Length: 463
Image (spheres, rainbow, N blue to C red):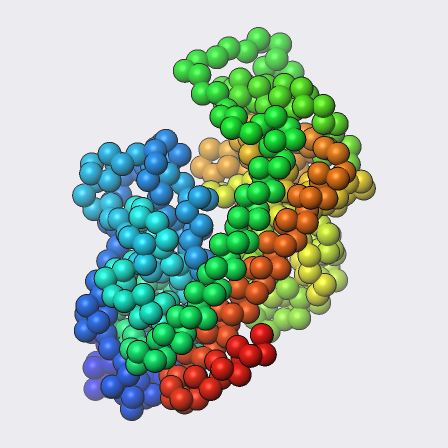
């Protein structure tokens, strides 16, 4: 009982808190107390936004990045973040901001996601942030890498409160042990992480260049969809569309179509070029299963998170073959905040799609090019038009069938897909280096810094 009462500032009676692996980790920290410090001892503030009014109406109406859960995965791509007016930050004093070099944690659900801030912005109430920008770059990159280790993720999981899903609290995160290695290990790890960041930067540029080529070919370079204060539609158009929502008839959709027609591109609907279009199915999750599950959170901006798929088993797959994926499929996020995200699926192992992921299989056309178009402004505007729902938006297979895809000359398509493939190669190199850096920090925690530096030297030469 005394162990239970003294185990944490917030008394924990849940048996998960005292699992053997957690006790082993705690003992390792105790035995190496000179290499671990709390955030306050490192001079790091742990905080979160606490505002509760909804500000969704202000999304994409300003210039300040507003970081949300979906943005937190490695280096935060600021260009993909929602933006809000700067006045909102001064209106709500509990809406906190972060600086370049700060680190974000997701508070609920997938609590082990960590993001490194590269541009000043505001933070949603679903995130915890650390003002690591106040410490040296090498030290904060060491911490960023430590936060990605299996060791620290177990610490996060242990500290979380668990009801329907794990949830982090600022109080307990402040008490977590942070690895404070020597300057040598910090600089060595930082060097590897910096190289990984550079690969990611070039990968992002490749995608932006591909987008620029597409828009130039279609006459959309520099085009900003019109946002009139009012517009009208004829009654016969309303009845023909079977839609009563005003948004459906916005003139920006007609303007997009006119520009695509004027470009000379050959326009085809998804229905014209596909032979399979269906949502996946709600899977039975099996942690040690041998079939991978792709759900909506694995569809990131312009790519798929292949490293964090969940699992089911072949028994479930045999009963639900319709959800089975093939390499070359096009996957679309169809429910919720990131609706419309689309990516080309390239995976050789057995996998299925969950019920919030749409599977598209083409009978003609390059699926990588088509997925890229669907994920661009061209596809996102069509998502905005055809999606439905009030509490949360939904995009159904029948809606996706109506999407128009402009086909530009094959040589230009090839230039675009080459850049996308190059981007994925660079991201793969970046992930490899981050994995090496992460493993080196795990070794430093468990075996000592000398072993970690030796590992980094050998792994760096091998890569």
